[in-house]
Image 1 (cartoon, helix red, strand yellow):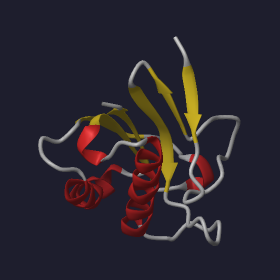
Image 2: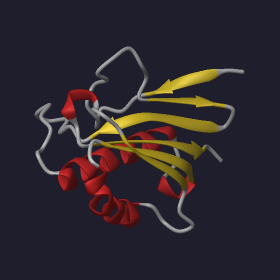
Image 3: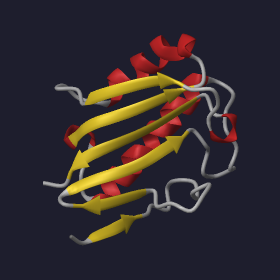
Amino acid sequence: MSKRAVFSDEIPKAVGPYSPAVVACNLLFVSGQLGIDPATGEMPDSVEAQTKLALRHLDAILKEAGTGPEKVVKTTVLLADMADFGTVNDIYGEYFPSPYPARACYAVKQLPKSAKVEIECIALME
């Protein structure tokens, strides 16, 4: 099995020793994306702005790999506060087309850089 990493100049640099995404076996595995503004390196305060940026980063990686949101089959959403579920869910629902990907959503104790949301996905490379 061969694999290759996918990078995009439109997203912030990784905050650790990992690839933003990896293609293997006709699947694209996208690492969790935070809502960091790539121009400033800063993270906005609101969960709305962070969610939109995280999805914009996912979109940039998907496009760089030659796929798109319509090919996403699974996502994982991590929240610092489950009270933000409705807000994140509304923005998420506008981004992904129907049929929506399978999804897990968890509240976690803390996210990197004290983010409010992190989103990862798996997409088809067909």
